Structures are given as C-alpha cells and as structure tokens.
Length: 136
View 1 (cartoon, rainbow, N blue to C red):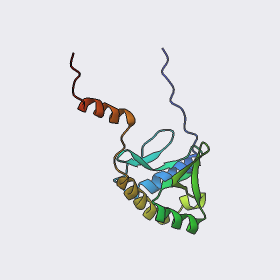
View 2 (view 1 turned 135 degrees about the horizontal axis):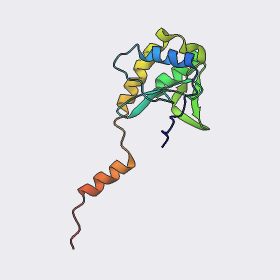
View 3 (view 1 turned 30 degrees about the vertical axis):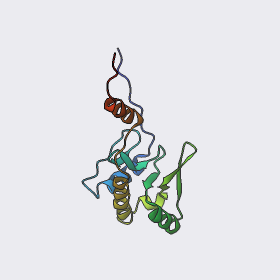
C-alpha cells in the first residue's frame, strides 16, 4: 500500500515567510493549515493566505472601510465569491510587518466578537438530544 501524498502548497516561500513573521508578532496566535495557512479564534478564521500567497485579513466594517481607503485595497475574492469581511492586503504591505501588526490585533478581536463557530450538524444534534424520547 502506498501512503497518500499531501497536496503541496502553491504559496511562494517568500510570501509564506512574511506571513509567518507577521503571525510571530503575537505569540498567542497559532498559525494553522498546511496548504492554506490561516489563523482562527473560536473556530472563526481571521487571516489567511490565498493559494497564490496574498494575505486576506478579516476586519469589522469601520476598520475595513478605513483600511481600504488608506491602502487602496479591495474586498477579497475567492473562487469568484466576494468575501465581505475580508480585505485583500496589497502585496507591498505584507512586507511591512510593523504597519500590519495593529490590523492583526483588530482582526483577531473581531473574530472573537463573532462568537463560536457552530456547524449545522452540531446544532441539529443538540436539538435532537433535547427532544423527549418517542413513546412506543
């Protein structure tokens, strides 16, 4: 039997290194994901690198508007879908770790405010568990 090969990441090593440098500015944040690196809190993703290595950062409305104007950034688009909470960070800004660090903190705090992720299956299972047992 042959072992399954894990898919290789397509992210350029230099961009991955810049992302890891940004994440390292807060030792309490854990980088996750092998092929698509990301950070999350309470099951809510707050940053990630696209397959081509562009940083996407989740920001609340007011911060997102300010960020987009200041850096001429756009909303993130993934597989043709606009991700309304995520901003596509301009490539040149990814290299400016100190400038991005405050946005990382804002993004994490926003992710924490979004609450805990609850999947539909878990919600349905809880609902079934609360129902009284059917009588034969």
